[in-house]
Length: 122
Image (cartoon, rainbow, N blue to C red):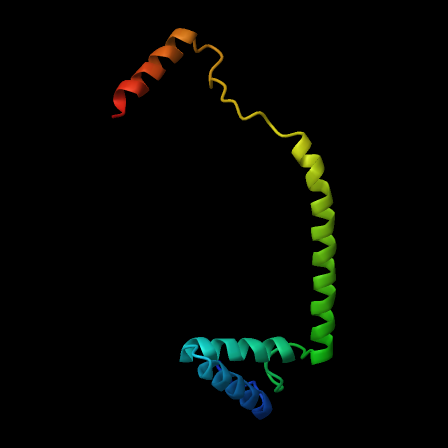
């Protein structure tokens, strides 16, 4: 089945997408963008095409919703955990002063390099 095919959507899902599409177009959104938003909304609400078929096991809409909810809860916990650890990271920040790349580089060679930069730019 080619990408973007709507064969696996029920008639009800197609009607819902068409209604959403029309609403967006009434609001002044372009046709392609309205269609994209409509199908995104249908996918978000129902979890994709509801017709049977394809390889593998078919998950129910409730199962898909539960999996999304679980994923969202884990993501929120991770964000919360990472935001509380940011304070610790900031205290050990590195210095922003630039150090010479080579310990053998003398102060004279650094002065020459600086002088070359001054004369090279206009």
